[in-house]
Image 1 (cartoon, rainbow, N blue to C red):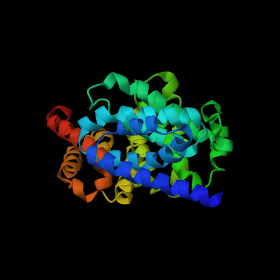
Image 2: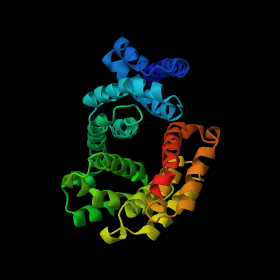
Image 3: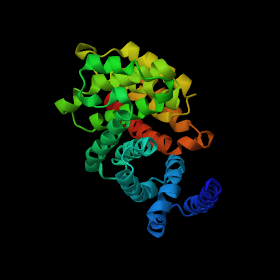
Image 4: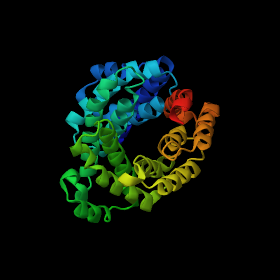
Length: 307
């Protein structure tokens, strides 16, 4: 029996490899749905989950925003379908949180900004379900803040990915909520998640927790609790950890620190650095870097209006 199962898995892996080659050549994420239609339910459970991770990576390598805007919904539908049959699968929940977070953030560039809040809500839902897979974090959104902080203290280094993407998807929903009080009230919980990520692995995802905290402390005026120098230190640390290759950090640093502190020289320098970056130096970050450069161009075009 073990030998037979091993042969089945080997055969399925060969099918997976052929389809990944096809996907990369054709650039059609909808082909995943066609694959699912031709496989039995049992075979699909073996083949499709291993495909999900590589497709996420391939999305991040895309420079064609139109292709991603048109093709990603097929992938999201596939994820939704897989999670119906495997609702507590940690890896699928992780990919669901990542994919919906990314696609929600793309909506303004795809010409459908009104969809961002809906997709952000789905990102949050998957992120919270991801956190629920840790026994001490189940029902995180309902916990008192003090109890939530105590629960996070029990989470170890092996759960950093879960904490970060659970928090980042939650923050994405908050960002597209247009200041809704219920959403803003959740920000301290996301802050606690990111502080725990820093304590466990500050370099995770290009210093992403530092990036969040830079925005968090820099987005408010000092009179409303903003802490610009704390913001600056987080941005600088994120740039160092990401080796200045993750361009969203440069653009956020300009927008949430330099602009807030009226530092025109720093503002222009950061945005020009983002625009001058050679995308081939970080191929796995092509999509977020293309988006960041587009944002940088728009911000530079309005520099006279800002300062």
